[in-house]
Image (cartoon, rainbow, N blue to C red; front, top):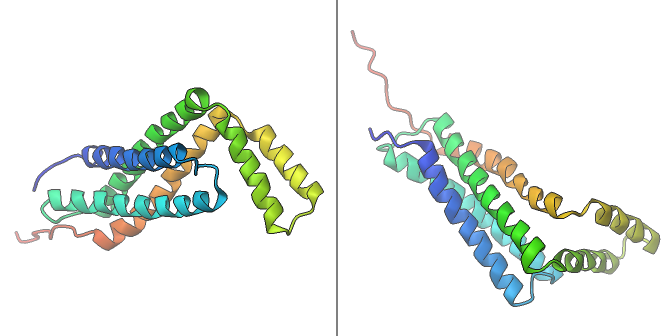
Length: 176
């Protein structure tokens, strides 16, 4: 059995996941669709699908490297590492995007959120105003970047499910 570290597999797939996410964000930014509410929701869903696929592929790849054997713990570890590394890289990218590339982008996204709330029609103007004041007071460059750590939590859930489905431990030889 090959003894490849879960860190190697998780790192490789974490970088791949981060690059895919960054590419999607850059495409949306360049086309001006990053502040489009409909596109924003669709791209978020699209990213979650890609996130699940890449995490499962990472765990499956590690299983193949290990000659078809995978413990739940190793599968879980590969998935968590994949999501953690992707999250850190994406967090750095968003920090650079909001701090240096387009410092006005956060305000544009806040305005998009306000327009979405107004169009939904289930909140009064005062409720929308209060919600946006609260959101603006909590919106900071660092906090916005740290929000990407939710990927690690999602990665834990996906890793646990994928690890349970893909686990295949070698049989123990108990003969004396």
